[in-house]
Length: 303
Image 1 (cartoon, helix red, strand yellow):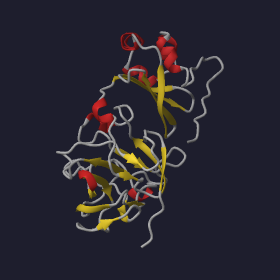
Image 2 (tube, rainbow, N blue to C red; image 1 turned 30 degrees about the vertical axis):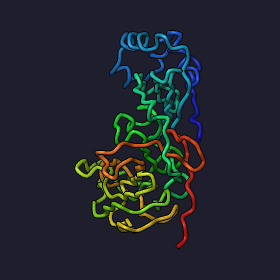
Image 3 (cartoon, helix red, strand yellow; image 1 turned 135 degrees about the horizontal axis):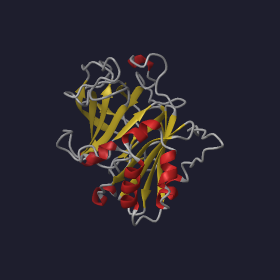
Image 4 (cartoon, one colour; image 1 turned 90 degrees about the horizontal axis):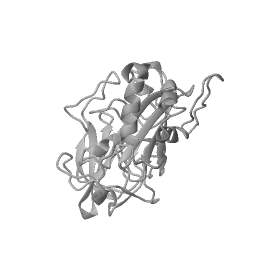
């Protein structure tokens, strides 16, 4: 991903993202606060930042960078301490101004974090996609707070820090919209929904049908994959069909509880989303995918 250029007037000191965690641990709150945006300072006072920070960072020796993600006009960084129980996130704009800061006590689930699916999966798309949400804490993956979605991923397509070109209210402006979604493993289709309209204008959501148009695949060992938020009327498989990795399932859409075109992908121990438990995905290349990583899927399988 393209590195955001960090510049600032010579008269103003500026921490680089790499320096920020140590600045917190060394108690340099006045300097950190001076680097925050006016909007941030309207919400949080210098005294509040110091009070919260001193209490939170007590006992932390160092933070390790866990993820970076390029946003429109900004770049977000997430660091986690050695225990995995404290996290720090900050977003820097193109001028080096800190536009957001989050400190969070992280919930951990080591008993399931270390698990992996018995089924081996490939990314369910062709080409290069961005992991917008994914990983084993709430700072990199908001799904982590919910047992039925804990190890889910949200993937989208980003180019030069943007997910769309043209009218931001139109689904067709988004790079991911209409892209082929592929079977991630051998399996049998056990659930299909394809009639739900895509959310229009972009930004509105359908909370009553959260998965939107979707396909559920049954794999061996009682594992079920969900591919959600598909484009209306694009699903091209039926219940009972057997699929192979790379088979076309449908097209990426913006249906259900979705704020823009993206793919929600997860594996669970039940075909019923609300009653199942999410399982960490074993990918063919062996890596653990985390927010900010670019992921390339296989070519679509020809019929």
